[in-house]
Image 1 (cartoon, rainbow, N blue to C red):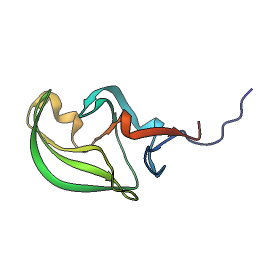
Image 2: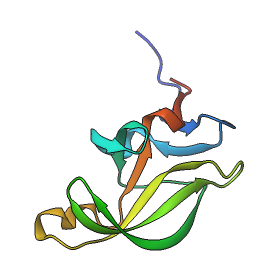
Image 3: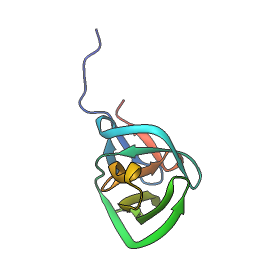
Length: 106
């Protein structure tokens, strides 16, 4: 039987700064700027850019790009506001693009 070594983490693909926990994934069925993306309930070791309105696949949202706190690579965005009722569940959540993160300590 394998021993658990602690939480499974995702890190910035550029500098390996830890940015989220696997347990915080809400969905793996999202689209980012560069392909597949994951929706997370929380993110860590990030900085947030200015808020802006963007027309995304699911409609108009107010979002803010999120950056790795160490190397400043864009990792995805944070949903600040959803204008459609069916999209409100995204508010306060984070998109991390699969191409910008790697599994760490799995």
